[in-house]
Length: 446
Image (cartoon, rainbow, N blue to C red; front, side):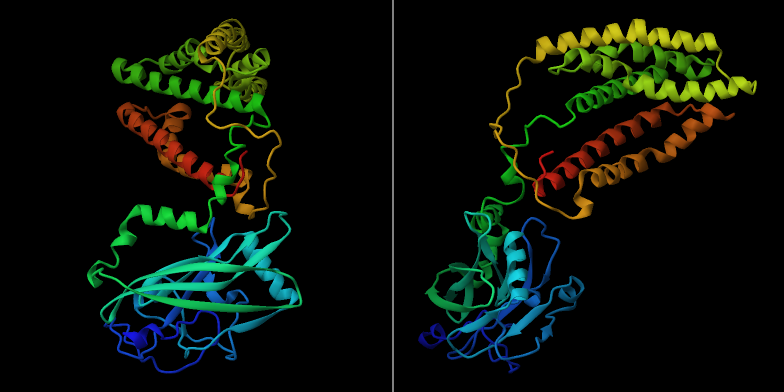
């Protein structure tokens, strides 16, 4: 095994198209046989699904002008895994002429926290491309790769990679890449060499190796900052609680009382429950009077404003379904003299019961700048796309509800409506968590 310790394992030097002498299918190596390193993918650390071939970045390739691609199995080919075959004799280092184009590509990779994956004897290893300097306008590239390989007999049982010797990226300079290999005898059995990858703590450890200041970890000092449009934000939250409570109560009342058998009873019950549940809409805020007024009239103003406008047109044309003007006045009176006072009660209770906010993280004095991101990661796009799944979960049910509301059919399967309501709540919660994670991972704390 002395000679196998001196075998060359090369990362970034040159490529050659020789036959493989080491048998990676049996995972056994004889004395003097070369160990092959396979380059896999490179991509931003904060978006693991965005991957590119390793040499899409201007890493040192050596004298060979083209790179061969080899798929181990059909499954790897389907998964889009392209392994760049590297098999070289034990040589020293290679040098890269850092042109402006190459420098910009590597700076972009470092700025976006690119990481890469490689394989040795089917064992994955990970590394980070570079590091951002303290001044935020300096970018460094790791140019020395240290491979620690453990073996048991004639088989490799463990591989790890350490990146060292950071070099500042400066256009029109030369960068030298170096490597070293350390062989260590191990008592780990070959059949147990994948056990460490099955331990969740291993990947948590790898994240620490790649750095703690990535993605959502950078915004812990800003996530509890007050919203930009706090008045509207808290009003929408209060209205959401209010409508959810009304929907749940009306569905349960209808199931227990067969309200659909009496004409107009469901609509009357909905108006009554909406007015009675107004205290749920009370939400705490520094401008609590404005908050109370906006929370009380936000939803009624949207619905009644649109309905009254359409209704005036219906009255003008003497339509049979036009609502009498006195009824519109009665609805307005309910909002002014019932819903608003009860919302005030909820606001006062909320202020007294909630107390002073106690966030677990200290909020930074100066807001952290939000980095640029892809267009589909912008909040407005996520808001629109995030509503597709909740809407899709109730679309069919809403069709039958509106058919019974505006047409001749009678809706009576309120037990199924309760199930759909619960599905809507679950889907909304899950989509909200995912959308929030996307934004935080893009370092957008808003």
